[in-house]
Length: 161
Image (cartoon, rainbow, N blue to C red; front, side, top):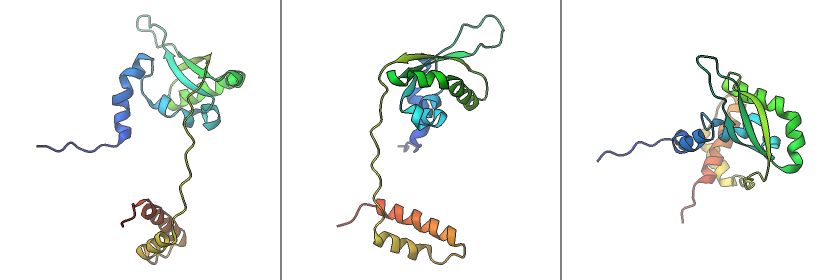
């Protein structure tokens, strides 16, 4: 029996969400999943992309820019309206062509992700073990970075009882 190959979850997002997003006009999931990177954390916490509406193509004419429909929290709609040219520019830059020519605002509640809990600091034992593992490296910055990485990894390991 052949073992299925392991793939990162990020490789499966387009396969899983692709049909649903295509029905909403999104060519790929990256505008939805990368929304905070495109518009910034502040804007992303108050608005989210709902749909991209593409105009009908006539003959062999070049495609007309689409309309990006955003859901925006009521009080923040005016800010998004002022930021619309910047948002369009950022989306177009992300795709590398002028795909968005207009933004339509729909007011409504925006889904909020629960705040992430900060990771606890590595234990002294994890730091000491990481320092022993790293050993002596001439470049002090590299050594410190490897110790931080190693102690973080060692802290994530479940403790054995």
